[in-house]
Image 1 (cartoon, rainbow, N blue to C red):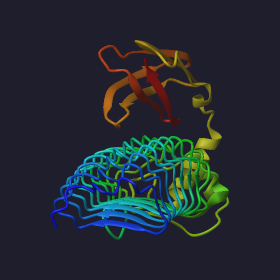
Image 2 (image 1 turned 30 degrees about the vertical axis):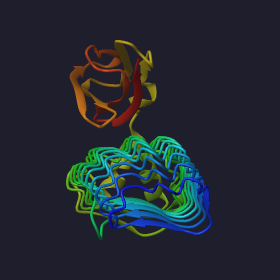
Image 3 (image 1 turned 135 degrees about the horizontal axis):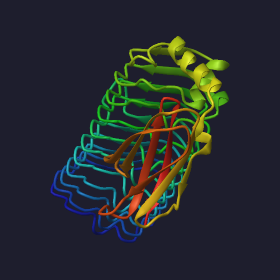
Image 4 (image 1 turned 180 degrees about the vertical axis):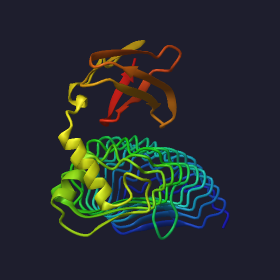
Length: 355
């Protein structure tokens, strides 16, 4: 059809049932829905190939059941959804070839069902999800049976998430190098499945999940993944509550036995990371990274920006005792960064803020 906008629906403030906005080849704007506050059932926005944003839904606060956004080839952002705070059912975002971030969903705090995001070719970050606290069902980032998000680098943007009521599945995301962003997640109440993420080297970011909330553990075919000895995984392996599959990863994380050995070594060592101090934070130009070493060793400090891009690497051989390294961030823009400190005793990630 030749519908280009939704003018004429300005008096509509609620829909008791569902709404489907689908297969409108000429639709460029949702103008006309400006006063819509709630949808009682499903809301589907799909196959509208000229639609570049969701402006027009600015007053939408709640969707009662499922909200699906998929296969809108010109959609570059989710601007227009800033007022949305809750979704009673599932949220699915998929097949969006031009979408680069999730900016526009900052007000969303609750998803009652699953949150599934897959097959989004240009999606580089989860930025925009900072308000999300609770997912009642699964969190699926990529899908083993379909497609992942080939440009996704890390999970920054999910720092507010603390509870998942089902599985945590992170699968087939070819460029994913870090799980930074999930540090505040403390329970999942389902399986933990990390699979087919070719660039992932560490499970840092999953440290704080309560092992008692993990049903089964599946870490498979992450070809660069060598570090799996995060606290949640170590605690689960010490007292498993379900199926364990660990294989197809790099040495160090290629079997249950390898991970258990790494966990045991970690427990038996004096972990200098407990004495890590980074100050001042926030900072304006330089920041001091202070730590203790039991013995001389090589220390690597890597700084990433909020998109997961590496902006600095400092590698030094340090002697035993208290050490200090000062990082000068001159020339870098203000914003959120992540400091990853690594020795052969462990890895710790700290969020830092430049003013």
